[in-house]
Image 1 (spheres, rainbow, N blue to C red):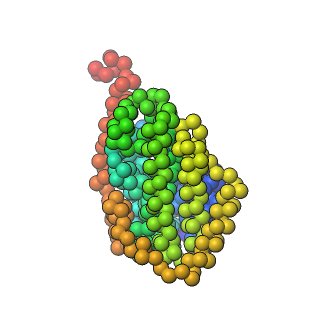
Image 2: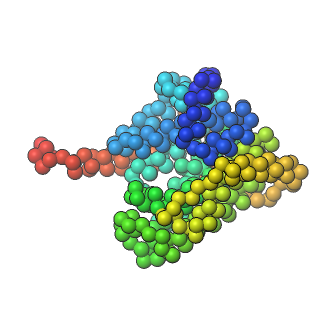
Image 3: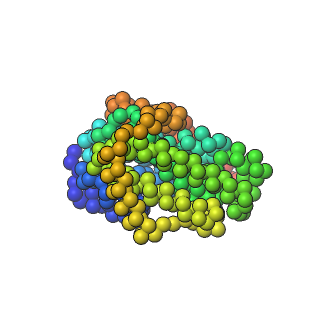
Length: 347
């Protein structure tokens, strides 16, 4: 299949409105990577929106799995993101385990899953963010396990930044990503917090922990950026600094992500784009860091294995997704029954 110019333009338009940070960073990628990356992100955005905007969550995720089936058969739906992603899958021999991991993460979101510990939260970040990082490596023709592990570090860091920024917004939507063990230790009842979120000292401390952990992973990821093709490094350094900049904005407001939502300005993004170019020049002359060879986080290891070993495209990692679909179907059924009249329920 061929990646059509018209489809790429449609994907770029979707990203321009849906992901300003990625749109800014993508400008520094070479065209041979930027265009497939736009197709990838547009499909991911389509998947995210499809689940968010539908009441019947199980049906939404099942529909996405069916769309993915068509993509991997080379018979995508007649939409720009589907056609473009199908072309990318074929051209780059994209392991199916990677986009399926993303669908599993979206299914977890749809069921309102909560995470007791930081490692459990890593498992979520692996699916909704590190899977995309691993796919980006595939688009750069990078299959080295160490570079993939550091790309997954970057994905987890970015998602932790998103979570730290959106604590209040998520709470208003009855979503919770702060580890529930942390709330238990602080004596905070989850339902009480979600009903009336307040930027207490304890909640701000938890938000700080997420930002600090993200910062650790941003630093660790840099060894992997230096292992990428030099033409790709500016774009990835830009993404790293733009997202870390969001974390610094969270820090500037005292880790209060409830009273306000951190954002970055266009001028700041331009500054980080310039910094990315400088960092790239430095990596060209510096020796390779030993951090590159650090073991992957346990929760992302399956992504590293999938991308590094070039698993057959038809292989699917379905167990987790099937379990999530079963739970979602049960939740949808309970929701429908709750809305039925007693007479209809008895019939």
